[in-house]
Length: 150
Length: 155
Image 1 (tube, each protein chain N blue to C red):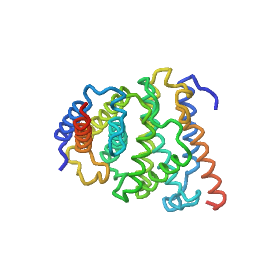
Image 2: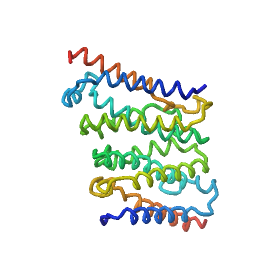
Image 3: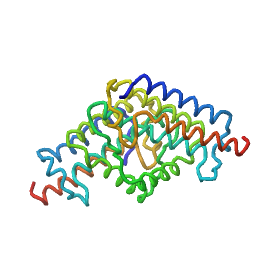
Image 4: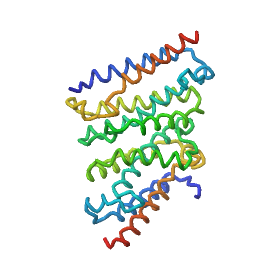
């Protein structure tokens, strides 16, 4: 069962984890690709993109609609992720962080407009909150910083 | 494309162009709207595509309104085609009523974003290839394609 207050608390916790993971990074440091090819900035723009999509998904489902991102083949989504990261690679860290905060806030507003009894299963691929997604990327950034000593 | 500096004019032209698109689909049944007669896309696919473009447009307007830069500067046609294909395919299972509700709901958000945007965020030049007024020609283009398809099909 979807619990709106818990979902929002999770979103706040994820935001704090991201803020801690990127604290003190310069734009140059945040732009360095890690061993998997993505920089910290790429990871942030990736989270932002999915929050942007999630906001519309939450709004759609809160009004009785269905997931517009049903679970399908992963190849297309992987390609999309790479494309979005490449498109946003030139953005400054300051904007990347501001965009993430704005998109996350839109998701929060969407959740506040959703009924309490919304079934999690309605969300399929995108998921209603994205907090675990944010935390996973925050942990990747933190691990990369530890490895690099920055 | 001429520069629009007047917010009211922009909103009016967007409304008119969207009205043309809605006129182009008037009277079609859901079955007819699901026929892939538009270069492999159906009318429903086109409507989902218009919604997705507005979803991207909403966040682009917000970025520019905060003095930021675009998330999608100069997408190549291959990238754009790939993105369009993925999103349209994902949304193919939505019912017509959902498709139409999404179209209206997201357009309302875009209009609201334009209404509260600073004047600097209404300059099409700030948007490179994804101008704030881009939906006007885009809606007209798809409306014309739908009308031509209906004429060919006699529906």
